[in-house]
Length: 361
Image 1 (tube, rainbow, N blue to C red):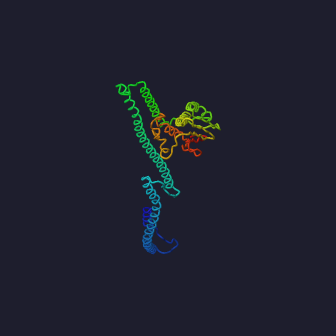
Image 2 (spheres, rainbow, N blue to C red; image 1 turned 180 degrees about the vertical axis):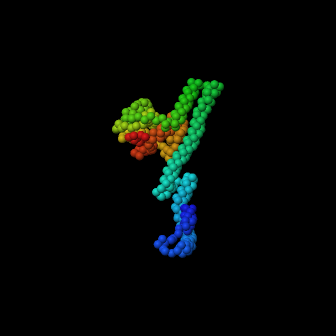
Image 3 (tube, rainbow, N blue to C red; image 1 turned 90 degrees about the horizontal axis):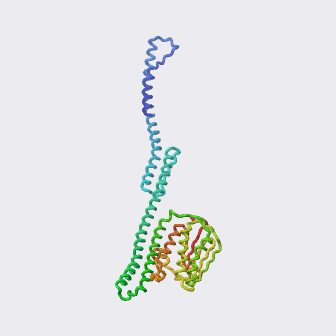
């Protein structure tokens, strides 16, 4: 713009002096006309030169003021976006570009905000996945360590017993007594290995859930049949009360395994002459048994792998310490809430409650 003004002033400087102001109706002589013309040109030149100077500087000042204000208006949103993007580069949460100019700068600001929101969300997801992966890896290491320890004890005992029988040392000469004990140990080891493999498989089961509709009453009636027989053999009173046949959607095989483990534990750890109850009503399943009361730290650790109560470390019931851990893993995978606590109505009972939904996720 300044260049245009300079050209305009130069043009005026060159063109205007060539314009001769002559009165066509005058009767003066040629000499008088020439003098008048020369006088008029000198006056015009003098006035023009002064006017051009003021005009030039005035226009220049106006141009610089307008240019400064215009540049400031343009630079301000750019500076704001630069400051915000620096903070975005440091992954600060809850920040955004606040540019409201109703032009391309506002569109650019909105695009930056959308991009940062998606980027921040993706980074947070990756961070959660990394934390989850690290946690899972640590758990796997701890689980394998605990599994190796659990397998080592019966293996060592069985090996020592077999060696003593081979060498016919002391009481171990009686093969008819100690061979069945070795067989029981091996069967226990086999069960533990199966449970370890099952647990490992379940940890990757989340991607392989096969959902289907289930009529709960019919489903429970199928599950309880073998445990009613076991309870009868142990002279345990097994009562069943199913008051509704609700429909749920979930993985039938996984849920069967979880409920079977719960009922098996209830029957296994209930003494002769006592009772086990299975009650179902409106999407809530309760499995209650009269057995050892679990409280405090033991109740918090009961779902950890290989955890056993002190009273059951003798392995009287042949437990592997993985039953309730498998239940916890399955119900977590199926997103089914549950609770395990001492009964409020009878302090001698433990109650496992499963809260179904009309549609399992």
